[in-house]
Image (cartoon, rainbow, N blue to C red; front, side, top):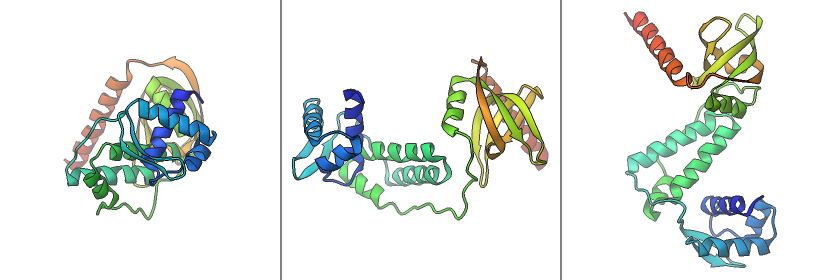
Length: 233
Protein backbone atom coordinates (compact mmCIF):
# COMPACT_ATOMS: atom_id res chain seq x y z
CA UNK A 1 0.00 0.00 0.00
CA UNK A 2 1.38 3.40 -0.99
CA UNK A 3 2.13 5.75 1.91
CA UNK A 4 -0.48 8.29 0.74
CA UNK A 5 -3.15 5.57 0.68
CA UNK A 6 -2.04 4.33 4.10
CA UNK A 7 -2.23 7.82 5.60
CA UNK A 8 -5.74 8.29 4.20
CA UNK A 9 -6.81 4.93 5.63
CA UNK A 10 -5.16 5.78 8.98
CA UNK A 11 -7.13 9.04 9.17
CA UNK A 12 -10.32 7.13 8.43
CA UNK A 13 -9.61 4.60 11.20
CA UNK A 14 -8.83 7.25 13.80
CA UNK A 15 -12.04 9.09 12.86
CA UNK A 16 -14.23 6.00 13.01
CA UNK A 17 -12.93 3.78 15.82
CA UNK A 18 -13.91 4.44 19.43
CA UNK A 19 -11.20 6.66 20.93
CA UNK A 20 -8.59 6.40 22.18
CA UNK A 21 -7.37 4.05 19.44
CA UNK A 22 -4.18 2.21 20.27
CA UNK A 23 -1.26 1.94 17.88
CA UNK A 24 -1.53 -1.84 18.13
CA UNK A 25 -5.11 -1.78 16.86
CA UNK A 26 -4.21 0.60 14.03
CA UNK A 27 -1.19 -1.50 13.08
CA UNK A 28 -3.32 -4.67 12.95
CA UNK A 29 -5.96 -2.98 10.78
CA UNK A 30 -3.37 -1.65 8.32
CA UNK A 31 -1.10 -4.72 8.53
CA UNK A 32 1.99 -2.67 9.35
CA UNK A 33 4.26 -2.36 12.39
CA UNK A 34 3.47 -0.11 15.35
CA UNK A 35 6.65 1.82 14.52
CA UNK A 36 5.15 2.64 11.10
CA UNK A 37 1.99 3.88 12.83
CA UNK A 38 4.03 6.21 15.05
CA UNK A 39 5.82 7.65 11.99
CA UNK A 40 2.56 8.04 10.07
CA UNK A 41 0.88 9.86 12.97
CA UNK A 42 3.86 12.23 13.07
CA UNK A 43 3.33 12.82 9.32
CA UNK A 44 -0.37 13.55 9.84
CA UNK A 45 0.39 15.94 12.68
CA UNK A 46 2.97 17.72 10.51
CA UNK A 47 0.26 18.11 7.86
CA UNK A 48 -2.02 19.84 10.37
CA UNK A 49 -4.12 17.08 11.91
CA UNK A 50 -4.70 17.58 15.63
CA UNK A 51 -4.32 14.07 17.02
CA UNK A 52 -4.08 13.80 20.79
CA UNK A 53 -2.44 10.90 22.57
CA UNK A 54 0.82 9.00 22.56
CA UNK A 55 2.30 5.53 22.43
CA UNK A 56 0.79 3.25 25.07
CA UNK A 57 -2.26 5.47 25.62
CA UNK A 58 -3.94 5.60 22.23
CA UNK A 59 -4.95 8.39 19.88
CA UNK A 60 -7.98 10.67 19.44
CA UNK A 61 -8.78 12.92 16.48
CA UNK A 62 -9.42 16.46 17.69
CA UNK A 63 -9.34 18.32 14.39
CA UNK A 64 -9.08 16.88 10.88
CA UNK A 65 -7.63 19.24 8.23
CA UNK A 66 -8.75 16.94 5.43
CA UNK A 67 -12.41 17.73 6.09
CA UNK A 68 -13.93 21.22 6.21
CA UNK A 69 -16.10 22.08 9.22
CA UNK A 70 -19.80 21.40 8.76
CA UNK A 71 -22.88 22.35 10.66
CA UNK A 72 -26.34 20.78 10.51
CA UNK A 73 -29.58 21.27 12.38
CA UNK A 74 -30.61 18.46 14.68
CA UNK A 75 -33.34 17.31 12.26
CA UNK A 76 -30.78 17.29 9.41
CA UNK A 77 -28.55 15.05 11.52
CA UNK A 78 -31.50 12.73 12.11
CA UNK A 79 -32.18 12.64 8.35
CA UNK A 80 -28.55 11.84 7.56
CA UNK A 81 -28.26 9.04 10.10
CA UNK A 82 -31.64 7.59 9.06
CA UNK A 83 -30.89 7.67 5.33
CA UNK A 84 -27.42 6.16 5.61
CA UNK A 85 -28.63 3.51 8.06
CA UNK A 86 -31.33 2.52 5.56
CA UNK A 87 -28.70 2.18 2.82
CA UNK A 88 -26.74 -0.03 5.21
CA UNK A 89 -29.68 -2.41 5.50
CA UNK A 90 -30.90 -2.32 1.90
CA UNK A 91 -27.67 -2.12 -0.07
CA UNK A 92 -25.18 -4.74 -1.15
CA UNK A 93 -22.03 -5.10 1.02
CA UNK A 94 -20.00 -2.46 -0.86
CA UNK A 95 -22.85 0.07 -0.78
CA UNK A 96 -23.51 -0.65 2.92
CA UNK A 97 -19.82 -0.12 3.72
CA UNK A 98 -19.80 3.10 1.69
CA UNK A 99 -22.76 4.39 3.73
CA UNK A 100 -20.95 3.62 6.98
CA UNK A 101 -17.74 5.29 5.73
CA UNK A 102 -19.67 8.37 4.56
CA UNK A 103 -21.33 8.75 7.96
CA UNK A 104 -17.95 8.52 9.68
CA UNK A 105 -16.58 11.30 7.44
CA UNK A 106 -19.63 13.50 8.02
CA UNK A 107 -19.50 13.05 11.79
CA UNK A 108 -15.80 13.88 11.81
CA UNK A 109 -16.62 17.38 10.52
CA UNK A 110 -19.22 18.15 13.19
CA UNK A 111 -18.71 20.04 16.44
CA UNK A 112 -18.58 17.78 19.51
CA UNK A 113 -22.16 18.66 20.55
CA UNK A 114 -23.54 17.58 17.18
CA UNK A 115 -21.44 14.41 17.19
CA UNK A 116 -23.20 13.47 20.44
CA UNK A 117 -26.59 14.21 18.84
CA UNK A 118 -25.74 11.89 15.93
CA UNK A 119 -24.51 9.15 18.27
CA UNK A 120 -27.84 9.27 20.13
CA UNK A 121 -30.22 9.89 17.20
CA UNK A 122 -33.87 9.24 18.06
CA UNK A 123 -34.72 7.93 14.57
CA UNK A 124 -33.73 4.31 13.92
CA UNK A 125 -34.11 1.88 11.02
CA UNK A 126 -35.29 -1.68 11.42
CA UNK A 127 -36.55 -3.64 8.42
CA UNK A 128 -38.23 -6.98 8.98
CA UNK A 129 -37.54 -7.83 5.34
CA UNK A 130 -34.79 -6.70 2.99
CA UNK A 131 -34.45 -6.87 -0.80
CA UNK A 132 -33.33 -10.24 -2.12
CA UNK A 133 -29.56 -10.41 -2.45
CA UNK A 134 -28.25 -10.31 -6.03
CA UNK A 135 -25.90 -13.05 -7.17
CA UNK A 136 -23.97 -10.72 -9.49
CA UNK A 137 -21.23 -8.25 -8.60
CA UNK A 138 -23.09 -5.00 -7.91
CA UNK A 139 -19.87 -2.97 -7.78
CA UNK A 140 -19.00 -3.82 -11.38
CA UNK A 141 -22.60 -3.16 -12.41
CA UNK A 142 -22.42 0.35 -10.93
CA UNK A 143 -19.05 0.90 -12.60
CA UNK A 144 -20.59 0.02 -15.98
CA UNK A 145 -23.30 2.63 -15.38
CA UNK A 146 -20.75 5.27 -14.37
CA UNK A 147 -18.67 4.44 -17.46
CA UNK A 148 -21.82 4.33 -19.68
CA UNK A 149 -20.78 0.93 -21.03
CA UNK A 150 -23.20 -1.57 -22.59
CA UNK A 151 -23.55 -4.98 -20.97
CA UNK A 152 -24.39 -8.39 -22.38
CA UNK A 153 -26.62 -10.12 -19.82
CA UNK A 154 -28.20 -13.51 -19.34
CA UNK A 155 -31.66 -12.87 -17.89
CA UNK A 156 -34.30 -15.22 -16.50
CA UNK A 157 -37.72 -13.55 -16.51
CA UNK A 158 -40.66 -14.15 -14.16
CA UNK A 159 -41.87 -16.98 -16.43
CA UNK A 160 -38.43 -18.62 -16.11
CA UNK A 161 -37.59 -17.98 -19.76
CA UNK A 162 -33.87 -17.34 -20.27
CA UNK A 163 -32.69 -14.75 -22.83
CA UNK A 164 -29.44 -13.12 -23.90
CA UNK A 165 -29.61 -9.35 -24.28
CA UNK A 166 -27.40 -6.32 -24.77
CA UNK A 167 -28.50 -3.44 -22.58
CA UNK A 168 -27.55 0.13 -21.72
CA UNK A 169 -27.68 0.18 -17.88
CA UNK A 170 -29.14 3.51 -16.73
CA UNK A 171 -29.96 3.37 -13.00
CA UNK A 172 -30.75 1.13 -10.04
CA UNK A 173 -34.13 1.48 -8.33
CA UNK A 174 -34.50 0.08 -4.80
CA UNK A 175 -38.03 -1.17 -4.09
CA UNK A 176 -39.40 -2.74 -0.90
CA UNK A 177 -38.53 -6.31 -1.90
CA UNK A 178 -36.57 -5.93 -5.11
CA UNK A 179 -33.73 -4.06 -6.75
CA UNK A 180 -34.60 -3.10 -10.32
CA UNK A 181 -32.18 -2.20 -13.09
CA UNK A 182 -33.57 0.48 -15.40
CA UNK A 183 -32.10 0.00 -18.85
CA UNK A 184 -32.46 0.41 -22.58
CA UNK A 185 -32.80 -3.04 -24.14
CA UNK A 186 -31.11 -3.24 -27.55
CA UNK A 187 -32.95 -6.50 -28.28
CA UNK A 188 -36.39 -4.92 -27.80
CA UNK A 189 -35.29 -1.37 -28.76
CA UNK A 190 -37.23 -0.10 -25.77
CA UNK A 191 -36.92 0.68 -22.07
CA UNK A 192 -37.05 -2.25 -19.70
CA UNK A 193 -36.92 -2.97 -15.94
CA UNK A 194 -34.86 -6.01 -14.98
CA UNK A 195 -34.98 -7.72 -11.59
CA UNK A 196 -31.33 -7.65 -10.55
CA UNK A 197 -31.70 -11.00 -8.77
CA UNK A 198 -32.77 -12.54 -12.09
CA UNK A 199 -29.65 -11.44 -13.95
CA UNK A 200 -27.65 -14.67 -13.94
CA UNK A 201 -24.44 -13.17 -15.32
CA UNK A 202 -23.19 -10.28 -17.41
CA UNK A 203 -20.18 -9.27 -19.45
CA UNK A 204 -18.77 -5.82 -20.11
CA UNK A 205 -18.59 -5.07 -23.82
CA UNK A 206 -16.43 -1.94 -24.24
CA UNK A 207 -19.41 -0.64 -26.26
CA UNK A 208 -19.89 2.91 -24.99
CA UNK A 209 -23.26 4.64 -25.10
CA UNK A 210 -21.83 7.92 -23.78
CA UNK A 211 -23.22 10.58 -23.69
CA UNK A 212 -26.68 9.01 -24.05
CA UNK A 213 -27.24 7.86 -20.46
CA UNK A 214 -28.61 11.13 -19.06
CA UNK A 215 -31.12 11.83 -21.89
CA UNK A 216 -32.15 8.15 -21.98
CA UNK A 217 -32.75 8.13 -18.23
CA UNK A 218 -34.66 11.42 -18.43
CA UNK A 219 -36.89 9.96 -21.16
CA UNK A 220 -37.40 6.76 -19.15
CA UNK A 221 -38.43 8.66 -16.01
CA UNK A 222 -40.84 10.77 -18.07
CA UNK A 223 -42.29 7.58 -19.57
CA UNK A 224 -42.80 6.04 -16.10
CA UNK A 225 -44.50 9.21 -14.87
CA UNK A 226 -46.86 9.14 -17.86
CA UNK A 227 -47.81 5.57 -16.96
CA UNK A 228 -48.57 6.65 -13.40
CA UNK A 229 -50.78 9.49 -14.65
CA UNK A 230 -52.72 7.06 -16.84
CA UNK A 231 -53.30 4.71 -13.92
CA UNK A 232 -54.50 7.56 -11.72
CA UNK A 233 -56.64 9.03 -14.52
